[in-house]
Every structure is written in structure tokens, then in C-alpha cells.
Image (tube, rainbow, N blue to C red):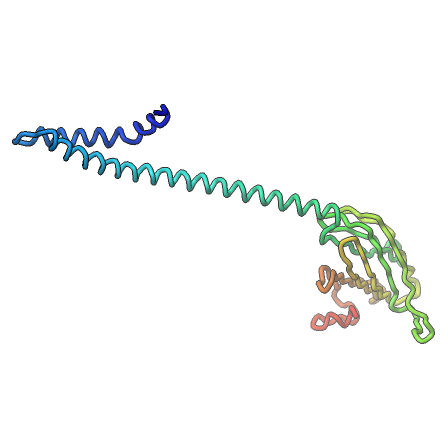
Length: 239
């Protein structure tokens, strides 16, 4: 017999054997009549198997508890590994394609009548293959004669997170009371539209902006007192 098997049998059945022997000895000792081999076996056998069954249940439950704990630990480790793999896959997609990252133009006055637009990436991942087109909605057009808005183009190979490209566009505000711009932005992963509204109010310039990615508004800023702004009808300003 394999030594490990023998040790295992001894480990699991020594207690039932001791209990059965003790119970048999007690019955023989306290009995006033004679005892033969048959009587000893009839007491020892049931006692041994009953005790074996009881201790077997104890060992079975203990093993099951240990197995459940091990399975729970394994499940937790597998979940942790899967989460790391999902994060690595997300990062790989983000750093190679840009994922759902987007860029937008940050308006700023670098001089009293000089408006500049800096291209800003506030997303988690880089953006690639940026192509932007700006149209001035106040530019006179005549569709019947084939005259449409001038498209001011800007291209950039890539822009990493928390970075800005200054002076992507410049606009002279001298003699202008307002500047309404629509900016169409296309990157490797998706397209977006930014609507920029600049108005002179009491001699000071105010700027409202809204950015859409698909049908979702991801950024919107409108200062108090901006001309034409109605909080109940926000599209009126950005149409």
C-alpha cells in the first residue's frame, strides 16, 4: 500500500478506532454476563462505522470550507487579472487610436482686440490626425452665385493629454461687435463640432462655447448676460 494512502487512512480513522475500542471496552467492563467474539464485533463494528461517518462528515465539511475559500481566492485573483487585462486593452486602444478622446479650441485674448484659439487636449489619451475647419458665420455668402463660407483649415499630426497648441487661429476683433464661429474637428477616432460665440457687451468681450461629439454635448460654457442666451432654449444661441 502506498505510504501516503496509509498515512491518510490512519489520519482519518484513528479517532473512530479509539472511540469504538473504548465503547466496546466500556460495554464489556460494565456487563455482568459473558461476552464472546460475536458480541464484541457487534458492538465494535457499528460503533466504528458510526464514529467514522460522524468524523467523515466533519472532515468533509472542513475540506469543503477550505475548497470554497480557495475558490473565492482564485476567483478574486482571476477578477483582478481580468480587470488589469481590460485596463491594458483600453490603454492600448487609447494610445494607438485615441479612443474617445477629443480636442477643443480654447479662446483667449492675447491683446485687447486680438482673439487667439489654442488647441487643447483635456482627455485621457492622445488624439491623432487632427483636421479642423473654421467658418465665420458672419461672413457674407451668396449660395446662388456659388459663394459660401471660407473654410479656414488647421492640421496637426498628434496632440498628447494636457497639452495645448497656441495660436492655432487668430482673429482681429477691431471694429467687430461679435464673432460667431463653427469649428468642425475630425480626428483618427471620431468627429466633433465646436461652436464659439464672441460678443462685445458694454465694451468688454464675452465668450460662449459649446462642443459636441456626435450628438452629445461634452462642453458648454455661457457667461451671464451673454446676448441671445436663453437657458430654456440653448440651441437658439448655438444654431
